[in-house]
Image (tube, rainbow, N blue to C red; front, side):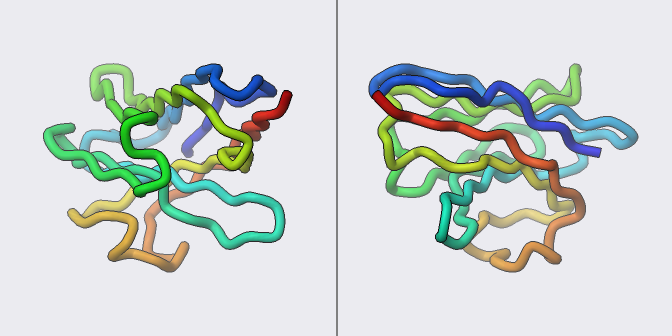
Amino acid sequence: QLVESGGGLVQPGWSLRLSCAASGFTLNYYAVHWFRQAPGKERAGVSCITRGGGSTTYADSVKGRFTISRDNATNTVYLQMNSLKPEDTAVYYCAVKNLPGSFSQYTRQTEYNYWGQGTQVTVSS
């Protein structure tokens, strides 16, 4: 099971840190991906991190503002989101995959081993 948390309502320019906590399995066997889905839009990849945490990937829209990290000791992955913009408003999901590769390679939800239920992020003044 994956559980996301940390979402909320913030003003433009503020920060949030999302967490993705795994239970029932060992997260460090998986690469972890963050996706988001805005109203009326398709789910899109945001960031991903390799099993060991040595490599990260970001969508162009969040580069320089978001940082993904993982703590395998606590079975948790984080997404630090800074300088938030209204266009970052979406439901954010984490997903895991037991093979290397970024979210641009695995575009179907069924290609991932597990998904979380999502956490809402709203950026509005």
